[in-house]
Length: 174
Figure 1 (cartoon, rainbow, N blue to C red):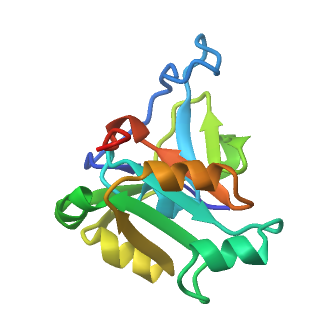
Figure 2 (figure 1 turned 180 degrees about the vertical axis):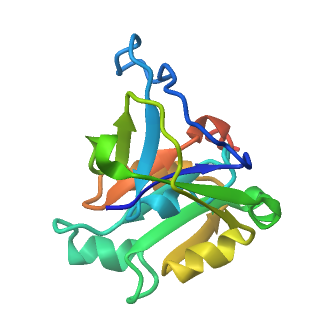
């Protein structure tokens, strides 16, 4: 299994565990976060870009697949607001790969893994074209004026999903 950390920061030599900002996690234990390869496309966007990401799973109905995926060859979609498309074109990301031995699964749906120990990346790759990186992974990139309607629909679908940085999304009703 391959695990990654995606950052806009270049040349991170060591990842130190940090206290999580999520209040549902133990606030006394620092964590290094990683994402599995299947869910990696959910993070091939600028850091604060709000996005609704989803992919099919064993329980996904034919109706949901037909409704939410445009391409019969793709099983994964990343949706960003229109106003973030230029930032997607202008952003460079660094993909740090970790040895997975010291990581534990935190959330299978989202592909999150964590380690309580400092981590030294075993590899670092630069991604200069995020749109191309998604395309190479056979991921549909879609845009919308607002993410909130889709957000609410996907929550009640049979798809696996990740909804990131929604606090930066255009407010409902705009």
